[in-house]
Image (tube, rainbow, N blue to C red; front, side, top):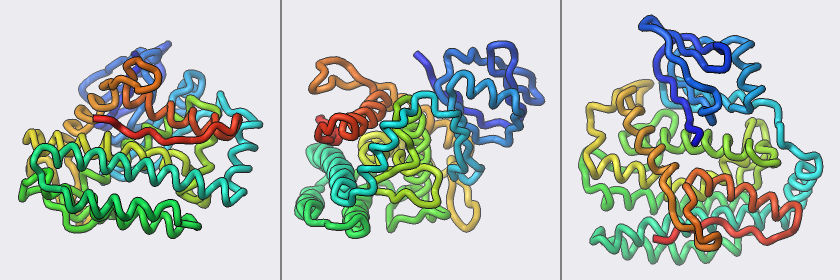
Length: 330
């Protein structure tokens, strides 16, 4: 099974025969390219044209993050699976506002339903979330009435704010308290974890879209505008509660992360390198853990589910098969 390569140290990434070589002051490490799915770079790393050509040849995306946990961008090799007819259909569904808003509503519906799955799971374990669940359920019924994307995103934002405040009951740790959502920079440890996890998921989802015929520049909930990619943001909304948030709950409740794994930076709080490594370890365990797929009757990893979500959109565009977002069952 292919795995992602995460680079935290400073050094040089090069091609060496049919391997990826990472050279630091401490020596050289070699990684067989056939075992690599994507590369995530967090350290100060130098790369050259020959390395990028190698990534293009092997169809490997390279994701860049700065030291403040922010996603910087992706080296996205030429679209080896892209299809002209699929791109035309994507644009058609974007330009037809009724079609676009229908997809956007489905994405928000999937995201909210997965939030409720998470909250019901913890409520059943004595976290007293009944009132918040009922409030979100009432708000969810307004999704179908949203006639424009801005209104829909505002509703989703209001629901997510209530959902995030539930973290205080789920975690019950005074060192990890949610007050309000803050991003640039995160103002507390919970926001630092949410931002870092979401950034990882956006990059992971982009890598999965790369393996389909879809063009990630065309989004439906997140407008196709000056940002490079939008579709990965759309699909990630569905999986944030069941991947990123579950990782956060596990790390905090099991006392894997503590105050020592954070540092102050840019008037905010970020994970230090040790904290990032612990988060990524748990994140990968979640990505590659499997569930029994309700329709396929086989075990499927969460990472594969993300790609399957992209395939479902592709079927909508090409075959007009109704798109229904993935909703977890626990």
